[in-house]
Image (tube, rainbow, N blue to C red; front, side, top):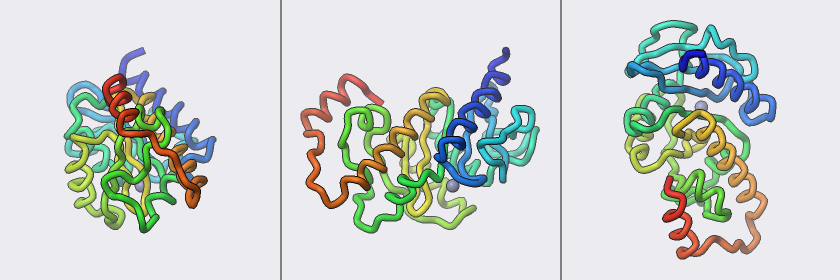
Length: 212
Ligand SMILES: [Zn+2]
């Protein structure tokens, strides 16, 4: 199987898995993979992640111009902003997952670190999660805001919208965004209760042993 055929199969397989577990509703959410030659495979616009056709995925260039397949997701520019700043990222996942979206709507969060470091796996897979200010759907300024954070963060949370996560592979990006969603759920469960966060020494140890 060629690298492109494998990427097409992986996007459909992970898309179905995310959709079937209720991690992004309706036709929300989009996945992409970097191919050779500055090309990218993206999920099409208005496509439910649970019913993707490998042959109809969108092939786009580095500027988002459609090369083949169905028209790409309207959020393709979010993915390209990540890839532009992260040369080693091979995949990007964006979801409208309930708990992360809920956290993105909270008024009292720290925009430099929206979720607290409460578990080691969250720190290892996501790290420090910044909040990107709100922009209306389709506003290209959102791509600039994501790009401004992307060189230092492989995961960002769009205010009143949802998470965007890059990874070396699609599997790594999916696992990281699932960890982010689970941590958002835990954070909401724990709201109002005194929480023991990981200490600075514990965070330093994780960052040293498991660099993002
Ligand atoms: Zn979105």
